[in-house]
Amino acid sequence: MNRSILFILSAPSGAGKTSLLHALMNDAEGVAVSVSHTTRKQRPGEVDGQHYHFVSVEEFQRMIADDAFIEHAQVFDNFYGTSKEAVRQQLDSGTDVILEIDWQGARQVRRLFPEAVSVFIVPPSVDALRERLSSRGQDSDEVIAGRMAQATSKISQYREYDFIIVNDDFEQAQVDLKAIIRSQRLTRASQIHAQNDMLNDLLAD
Image (cartoon, rainbow, N blue to C red; front, side, top):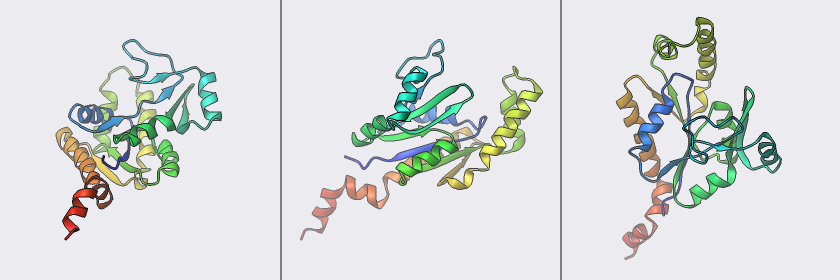
């Protein structure tokens, strides 16, 4: 069984993180995206347990009191959190796990899993970011300006991450993300765990 790896994937709004993650999961083996708990209302087309674990505010607060989350945060009027037990079960089963969280959540995760590998996705330029945030055509200039300010604030946290991917060419960004995952599976520690018997046989003489 492979030595499982915990990955953190973060990005500002408009960097293309979710699209990259969906593309990765369509072509990846041995890796899963952690499903978060949330108190927000379930939207049409969403499946409980697949997109989120939808819980009440009372249940979420109980889980906080029970120290059940690796990380959790309040976003506007809703709460979001990553289950400690669920992530550990996946890692123990030999599956690499990706947490799609923001930089504040990433800080919380590193305290419990200092060996986690963190990846930050950035847009290629301010103009590209503004274009992506404006492409929906449903937001006012004021709303877009607010999102730009939030994105700039988040981008400033890139120094806390192990890897940075510039999402300029989407296909290249996909290759880069896959390369990071593959490289971590080839580290000495991972290979010693995965190939222990073979390595011992090579040394037996």
